[in-house]
Image (cartoon, rainbow, N blue to C red; front, side, top):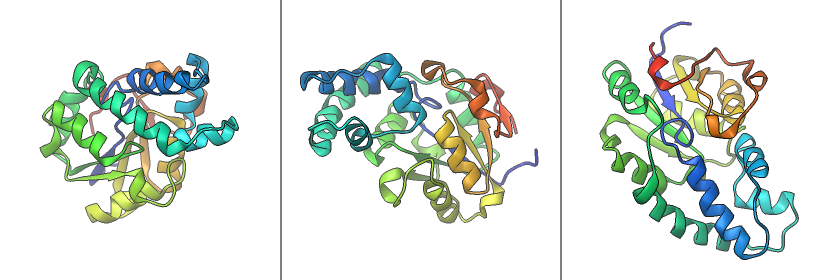
Length: 210
């Protein structure tokens, strides 16, 4: 694999171990309305990069997506500071790679969530740009967020390498014309066959050496 000129990181499940906390927050809110989310359903949510609107529509729930998101945000913001942890090798990988390449974040999370996570672990200065899904028309698995990341970083898509943990992220990277290295999130239990189009699969970010 050729060396990249720019590296684009996902956030949730790759840099920070947020999926258990996302589940905890969303499940608490949906349960209050009588619609709990099972662990199996949450893994489906992760693999498809769902948000509250997609989940509500898919299951035909009589709920207001914006109200759900607002209630979830209050819970999740508290969990970031109380329970959030980095994924194995994440900090070392960011410190190491930032010395060789310009880095950015392209994530389905909102900007304020990304900034809070990076701030907690003192990683903000290592990333040149932050591109949240909310700033593009279509989220992953569409390529929009990665194409925007390449544009604002000043590189061609072919010059960028994406680090991802999900099938939706992999599809988005490939649709953008980028190389993609997958570091699967153990919490999602995604079958490796769903990552067959990846340029490389690693077990942890300790192996992210380019």
